[in-house]
Image (cartoon, rainbow, N blue to C red; front, side, top):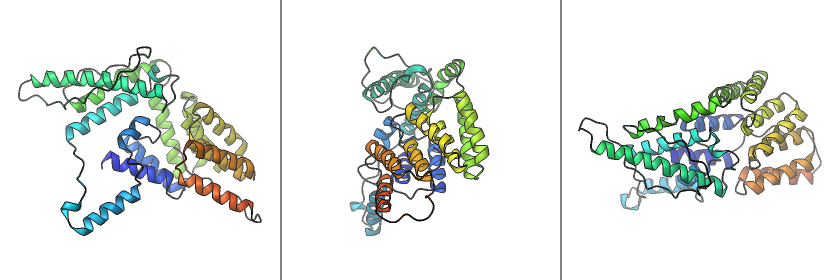
Length: 326
């Protein structure tokens, strides 16, 4: 499945779909399977089709197919196995750099973050071009390298140099060039892969409604990697299901401190306030989240619902928690 299509599906589930356990789990599984992250500015620039929505794209495509006229059908985007291999290789390289100190102290989505992404891409393209040149001179039996993409603008010299990928024979092999940087990060004391395994096991336990086990897995993930906002937010989800609301609020606030633009952490905090029947605090947090993500239809709907509820007689128990682990 094309990454751009999967990315659009994730955006739809994040912003327009009905919230719930199954939706969250499906989103997480898709994101993990295709190595996608809606918070990643680089992926958003490359893959998002906004301002068009997935629904609009679907309806336009269906209308075109129904008409049966090839002339009216939008031209399919050009793609090749080489370009796909290049994109996959660079994505893996960038993911590995995020596990090193190259992005330390930089907020994703900021100008400095974009500068460092551009510098990483320039370095990767430089190495990728060398691979292409070496294979142009190789015997006919040698694997063909993907053509190099134009180098991106280099970031200011004050930023650290990223770890360069090692020479490879093909674009697919280029994706393995991040091994050394990952090992370096582990040697610095953080085993990111082990923490991710524990997080994913926690997510699986949440899907099975085994919240005690999920809490245990998230605890261990945080012990390994305590500066990952997602882990704190996921642990808050487990605690909410277990009725540990004040402790869940602490975890949400920690996630927000680590990543001030993390919308889901604020949604979870709003859920805590809902369970504690604190509507004013709940609305405040939801509006903070909407200020960060003003196109999020789910947030708008929750705020509207809260506003309507405030003007009507209160009845029944608080609603459930929006969303599952990220």
